[in-house]
View 1: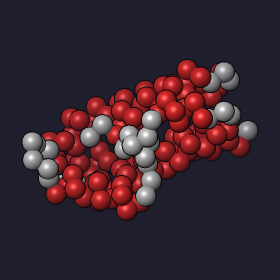
View 2: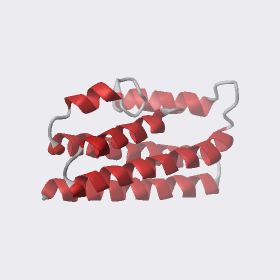
View 3: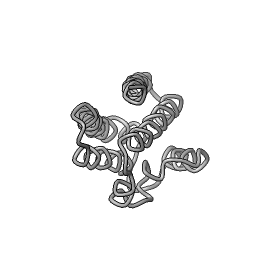
View 4: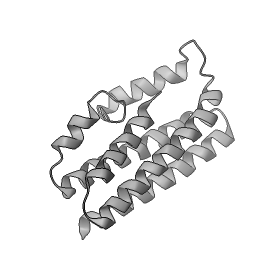
Length: 145
């Protein structure tokens, strides 16, 4: 599952392209947080879900969820991130795309929390939900300015 690495790259590219110091700092922080989330998913989620060479029911459930939601082409790396970033010509647009991405992340981790087979897994996913919700608040505050 390389979906989180797509959001890391997206935020890194936005940070590189952004001139405004405060917005650049937000995108850099989001990129670093995505890198941490990827590590958590690789070390905690994969073993818990029993990801092996075979496709598990939980993997299928996650894919079905993403399809059902009809979102997150960015999240699932079905678009060219370079093209997306090139098409974002204002900081407001960048923040709006980031906001949508973070809102999706909240739903994604909430879903994993509900599907987790262990209490530890549920706790980890809830922590990720809280962190993503803080990202939503940060971005909304930037958009309000």
